[in-house]
Image (cartoon, rainbow, N blue to C red):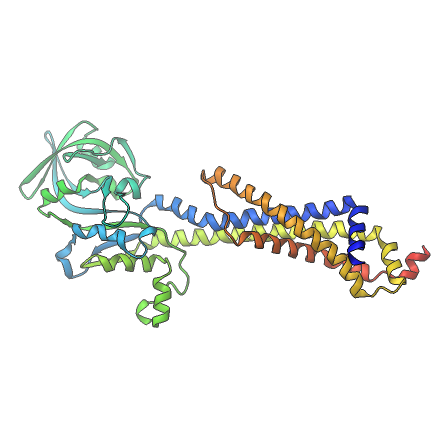
Length: 409
């Protein structure tokens, strides 16, 4: 009996059914798109933010290591627990040098580093490490060093030395000299503009610090810090420490790196880590807020459509009450109609929303996204919620209909 009533209801009111279906499908589609993007956008935004600089500084411990780290330990960074979260790193060795270009002389910092070094780690994939990977925002006019005696110079130092790409400069440190061919001038807007950057092995030889590095900058994908992540690991219980260690906080990733580098101390660069965490939290909050707004608008549209439908069906409802239908039976009919429509709307909304999420991802991030498994049941559940919330007011109105007044006309 109930099935026949529902079938006749759909066949006799196709426009009203379609409007409710369209409202639910649109709400489910927008929710699917936003939630699908929110699941991927944090990862993609974190990758984008990695282009703004490293977020972990690795330096010698206060006493151990004689003020240097060992270059031979650097490949171990790509073997830690969070190795897949580490997008890149680069070592540095520093010294004060006397620069001379013709008759002009200036004092400045000489920095040895990796520009684009292919790193082979036994048992791991080959990766490319260096400044080009962790600081793509460096603006180099000219080219990057390719040979052992080539270098790039900061814009401020280049101005003081009056040197341009193609020129040569001699760096002298404690009586030892090295001539560099300048192949590029770098502009960063920071302290790097007062330095000369050359291949790590060349500067190590000039400073007589073979196999040593002064510090390492590490760029890692991390999750936003919360109150638990800010706790002191020394005060944690065993279970708390395991949870902290297995969560990609910037502090736990730094601890990972510190453990494999002998005589080192790793600490987050909080200016970058905090800004990233705050931005990702706000972004997720915005996506959730937009999803709730979309579902709310969809529920309002459903409610409006059903209210109009209930006004047309008042005689039908009054007749059912007159022949003995109780509140439960009337509710079952109208809720059954709405839930059937919501299932169909949820499925169509999921399919459309998945495509919409792909379009947005390609437009904004120039990449595709993979829909997570939980998104389909979430879309169906969203459709149910929209249908139920949108049905509350119309159903209440239907239950308050007085058969005598309506049938009398």
